Image 1 (cartoon, rainbow over the protein chains, first blue to last red):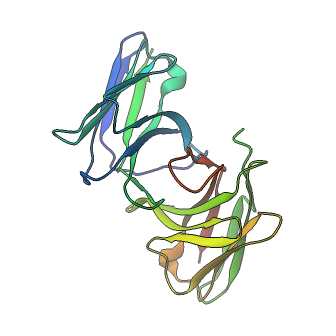
Image 2: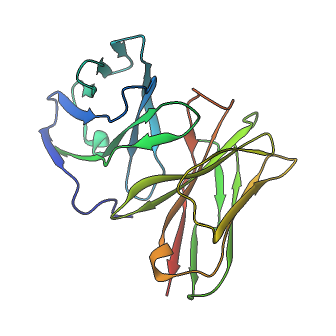
Length: 111
Length: 113
């Protein structure tokens, strides 16, 4: 598979524990945020999104929190599983249609 | 499977050459986006087309161009290739032009030797 970002920050988590992945975004005018998961050799896969008029959104085993005051986004994964091992990217959208991606965080799930 | 199809999966070529990458969006999606992913740059937005028209432009080099055809498939043309153009190129599609979830294809891995 492909190696995405050899020097990515890495989060090691025990299987069954909760994971928290953090992302600082840059543009205070961004009004839409998305989390993507990228497994080795695959394209980014949509996980969850949130608009700037919300501060929390929940999906299946995932929760996204948005703190506009400090321009911070987090993704919480409950009961992390081996299949959650991947690189996670946050992305922000300001005016126009361009998504700006963060550098990514590698999550390694230990059995 | 995202529903976005990219061909070819792998492409090996030489410096100075020209290649074309192809993308078929999800059924019903009008927007197509192109991204470049390299080890040192992460995912970089290149260009977006919406229903055949260019909608947004990112850090796309002048040597690169794209178009979207009436059947909504898109092609990314890369010319005068350099070693530094070696990367993964992803296509994504979405229903509309803004504030829509973008669904990504599996990518084309370009190696310029």
